[in-house]
Length: 121
Image (cartoon, rainbow, N blue to C red; front, top):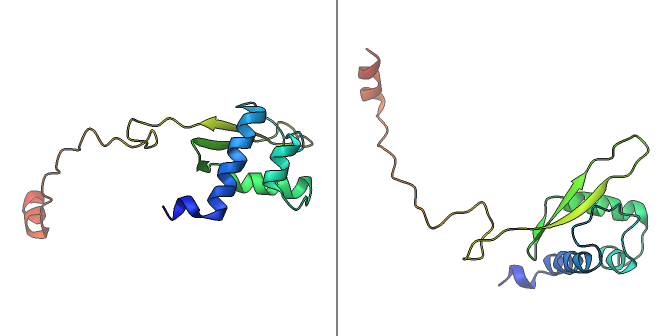
């Protein structure tokens, strides 16, 4: 509940939802973003370089059912592109890397130092 009321997380969630409305999962440069997306990401209108740096810091961030990805530029004078991807969730609302339905079997007890020394002899 505390995370849901965090202003920083709310701003990122709003950014990702606005981005999804205007661009979907298309790869796009920071300069080519829709004005509404830029307004959410950079409310003080600090410019393209600030926006590119901000998006670069958000790379890999998961929020509101999305993850922001970054593709490196192809040439020296090209700009990186960003893409917003939907994250998969299981029926419990967890991200795809968790699996709470299949518990791991218990581990065999590890030998202590004395037993380990006996095994090596």
